Length: 620
Image 1: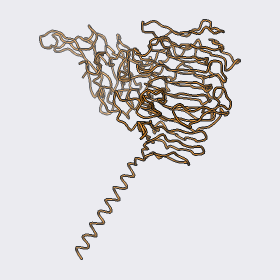
Image 2 (image 1 turned 60 degrees about the vertical axis):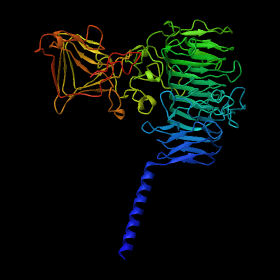
Image 3 (image 1 turned 180 degrees about the vertical axis):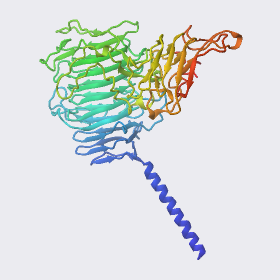
Image 4 (image 1 turned 90 degrees about the horizontal axis):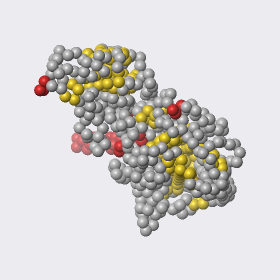
């Protein structure tokens, strides 16, 4: 009997253990393979990871609902060598409603490295009944895919909702031929083919795609708050009679990419493409290795459109390149007539691109077709953004970026008023971001990878420390202050910091050096916090990515005390003549530090372009 009781007790313990393991597995979620088409209403849940192992089609009449926070991972290729993809067919819907706190992520099953970052699965395709070239009524097939039809007669068609969705590391070949890496069927991150205006595309990001980020083939779908960064071709591409609208769009084009936009039509065929773009920030890398004559924006093949409140900057052959025109009217004056046979580019756009020779070239016009474009112009000034590195080639060179405009800068001068049509929002600034609207904060690749400040930080002229403090001043506890560069407190000057004050620093300035507070010889810092109200030097990064080391420079105090050899020396990495320390006065007084917290510092104060992560100038 005792033996039987022992075995029963042992079995009970095993059962409880198995039950607990099962519950733990449920809590962690499961990896769900997706191998077959979706033919009825289906929900993907946020506690699972879904592996796309093939080209999965959501067929007509079916709706795929994806919960906020869900992860979907695509295979680089299926058993037939084709990249995985999610395809929403005509008559089907996707309801992918993520949130800022819980975005939906499409990514790869492959291991991502610094160099293995693009073309690691396919992408997402929506096919609708919108009008395309030579329509209404005409249809076409998505290139490289059999039976994926788009086009029709309904520009108000509804393919569903995509909000707070991230599509990363895609662009692999959906239909490889003899040359699987270059068949011409590399897929866009998000393909919107004949998609109608009743579809919602908001807060969507495509990053590290091998081909285009977003591409619209006809239809009238609208985009708002969309980011396209570090992609291998164009950030935003339109063709085949696309007549949708875009506002608050952002592109970073690195050495692997081509254009921020490539907007085409079919010369004089109707409907002519007529994209309307307002509030865009397009930035190209400083040493783009692709065709140096290319424009940051390429408008060609007779496209029409409206373009206003744009900021273009970086290295490019020109800001806007216009080629292969038709009989559309090209003008710097808007009109409400002649639509869609009008290409309007506002004179208020800021085009501050430089060619490889350092010259500002705003327009490259090669069209001779009548009517010609008389004297196009734009504003050729620095837009005045919070932080855009002056020198960068790829994503690896960007240590931090903040594309918001500085209050009172050139981005606030003479903004355009977009059409009052219920879609566009009137702004007081140019570009994709407002001073207090960093809409990529909290959910984007840049934010998740500690390359973007917390959007609640609002540097202004009043609360940003100057490069030189030449008169005594006090930092008050009721204000958050910002270090955006190296700040030097001059000899004879006292910097007083009240108890409870917070100073937040950026990771780098525009030239790559870490912002640092330097108290020079003969200057003083009086920073007297208390146990209940300490003084804090910290980072502008969101709490979600902290703690981490090397997020800014640090605090340097230079005195006249004796050093080895009884001479002077200089802090390595600081500009010549401003980092001197040492002398003969061991009783020197540089001030007071009490209850002061210096967090997350140690970044490089003397940027070395040949080795930015290890120049030897990392600070204490």
